[in-house]
Image (tube, rainbow, N blue to C red):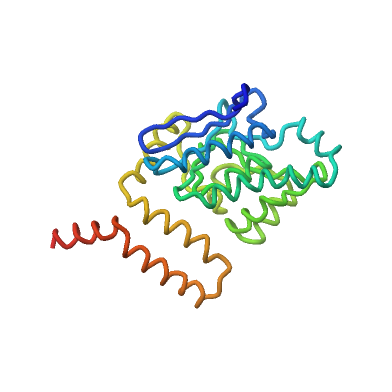
Length: 255
């Protein structure tokens, strides 16, 4: 563990909270932060008591994208060094997608570039009324490349094109219209609203939520019959779980 803690970890009930902790840099991403973020996501996954993970930012902003020092490093790095750097961030996106429990982005302030990508990579996005989202990469000749795979799965093709080529920031209301945001809460009630939102997962079957998450992402891009076949497999697996058998027994007992 490095001495410079750029990401904080805490647990509230059955929810793990991962906080990007560079408020003086608007929580801009650097190698250290990305490494710690991956480590803490795995820590939460290893805890059987965790039912959800909340990613948020310390201070006024969620995440402003890459740190300026990282941009300088990119401009001077070799192809192999840039490849290794890009893959490290890709691992974060893949990890979020592959975790068993829902990962929720709690966005206050700005979520820009890689920060917007990080929020969009989460299974659910909650935002304050004043939150801002955007992909300004093209302004400096860069491409929002990996995050485009996520964005394209969240919103329509034309809306995605507009966001990544015009570099405009959008507000929380527009982000929800497009499908980037699930819920918007008032600034003064944001923390309490996020806690209440994720607490719902404590009342649900962890195995059922996990199987549902995996199937939802697995069937993306599948042909109709192939998706139904995948559904058959998961249907059978779900029937054999302890949660399902106990749930059916409780339901029948009520009748």
